Length: 379
Image 1: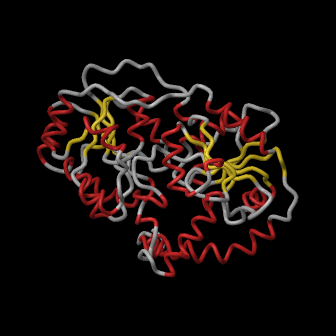
Image 2 (image 1 turned 60 degrees about the horizontal axis):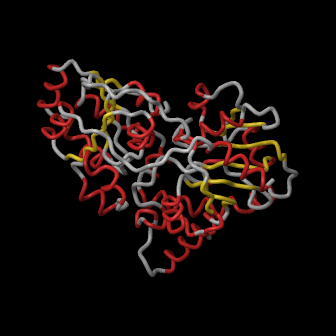
Image 3 (image 1 turned 135 degrees about the vertical axis):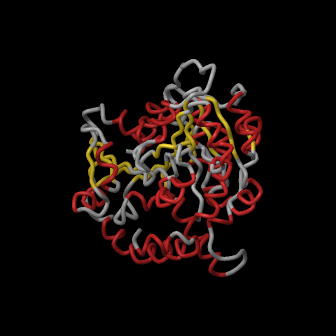
């Protein structure tokens, strides 16, 4: 791990770095605004990997010969990108050229993942979002900020975040409930919230849920340090669970959040029965191969339950601490309460006696077309 990455693992250090970065890059982004733009160039990015809404929409748009669709990301994502979509690192000459000359950008987490030279003006930036917002996000969460409420530096942080969220021409929402959440989380006018459906839930698989569970995917959400991550995985790191896996010939795959990939060496020793999924691979591919998806607070649980019709277990041994430090939206209990457990014995019982799925989440078969129509209206 690089020295910079070690420093940025600290939440406060990361937020300070982001503030410094904003002010340093602002003059360059203003200059980039004056460069002529290509209306047929569409730039996508997702710093967590090639997947989610961005992947589905990019592949849909790449089928149109009038759209020049490109993806900007780290080189480890390159092998996953199909030939129909251009690829470049955001710091490469090609990547910087695309940032300066594109008219339209699609973000998945934040604008910074699109690159350092995304113009400040004369461009359209759209937010596709990632996962499902079951955790507190942006203005909903104290974890977003470095400084305490009421301080001058806190007001500066909030002003910068408000400015950045209002750079989005539109924020695409899955339904009215998400739109209401995002109005508060992003602090944007309701006119910026476009209910189109989310591409990754556009097509749901009609696979029959297996009677028994033979393969398991364990995928905790991101945790800010190794202590919290180990607490989240503690029910799977004991002799009882190892013996259960062995006696039932279960196939177990572990996929950590991409930002926790440096913890694999430590965890492998505690979970020797589990095979390791590479951090850059799309989690949906591993969900499809499993019978049961186990997580704590990962929004991929929605995909597993709704899109892929998999058995689900929400294992939250660190529930109280996580909800205090990060925050969990009230909809969490409504969506996942019946699947929530905390101990090894409860997890084993759920594996032996799975519970049927139930969640009131709509699917939309025209999400990609809806988004393209909306984008074209701005062009």
